[in-house]
Length: 125
Image (cartoon, rainbow, N blue to C red; front, side, top):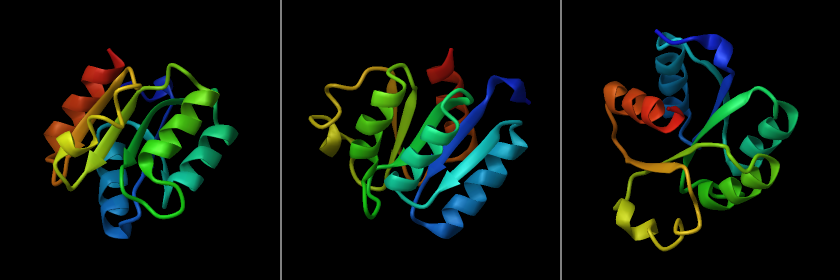
């Protein structure tokens, strides 16, 4: 269980079932969560909750604005925002696109609840 006073996690994935399951998982770990269906929604959530969000978890491949481009725009709002990128593809495929990012982790799908929680703890410490 974690301290929910630390703020909110934005979780963005276009897969509805994964969004619901991961939200429940994060709530079970004691985090507060805002969900988004794409990068555009994730950016909007950060704009509206900028002072409360401490982490973004973004699927790399999403409609409208993908996770990498969403992260770039989110970092304009909060340059220190930790980001966990999720991908169902080989994570090394995105290495070049992520060179300019500090304070990020790439997590391969499918991931276990433990792996996600470990990534969160690692990136916020």
